[in-house]
Image (cartoon, rainbow, N blue to C red):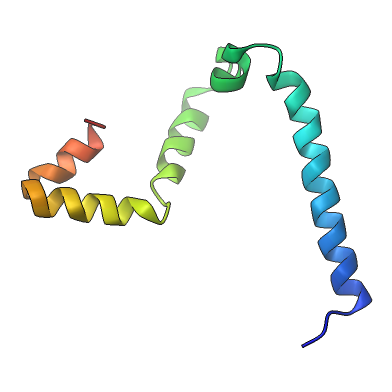
Length: 84
């Protein structure tokens, strides 16, 4: 399979857009550690919650939960939910 000019154009535009977004937000986030890690404490509760839930869809989470459940029984799942 070979890539056509349209394929390469889409790939290049994707990377250019990604770098542009990164540069835009890096200036804002570079102001302080609070701005970088806490978004200036301006994130609404629903966005912070959505971010936490989205994090649990990572590839390693099912493996970690399975390991905790094997080691501690069903209580291991509650440990994971409590972030212990």
